[in-house]
Length: 307
Image (cartoon, one colour):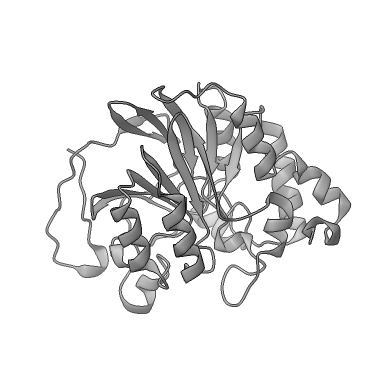
């Protein structure tokens, strides 16, 4: 069933150039032979917040557009936005988003991950009909430069058995593999508080199975948003990178490394280089080795430190 038949024609027209299948065709026309370096950007949560008081206290206007404008100047193959493009997945919010995106987009492939805010409701029972009608399937994969890239929908705060089976098949290839998903698997234990508060920082259903699958498949990176901060953890032989600084409000969540930023990633035969680009212009590289630090207060634990 064509979902876009039930959407406002003006919105379908605005979204048409950004549909995933169209962006992937654009990417397929770019050079990307096996063994070549592949460079791309990862941009986290962008929605400015539904509530004016949060925007006033914890955000600044135009961060997403400023960062999108900046990375358009770089020699990158594509950009992946990790979800939460809009504060709530309704027609008016998506219209506002597309109007802003068209002002800064220069034609580079722009690929999306669905976030919980991109659904009909950011919390509680919701559906993803509007997102799917505008962008297409929320679970998909593509190959570029000999790398398998997989996008997995965790926006419902869980990953189903069907999704896990699909993920395992999608990762059953040789070469480097990279996964993008909106929410971190909750058992990482890095972001959020404890108990019910901790659960806000990631998806629960299927989380351990997800981590087992990406570890067994030898995935190099899992890039995640949802928590509006930056963080890194190596778990089960896989590096998980939290990059939620794409323009959403920087709530006081206990994360010391909460700042607006995006990543540029370079994949070469020698390895993967992740660079963090802060809004103030500072750039630093995520080191290959991480140091685990002791802590005395569980809610404010900081497990990693740059070396």
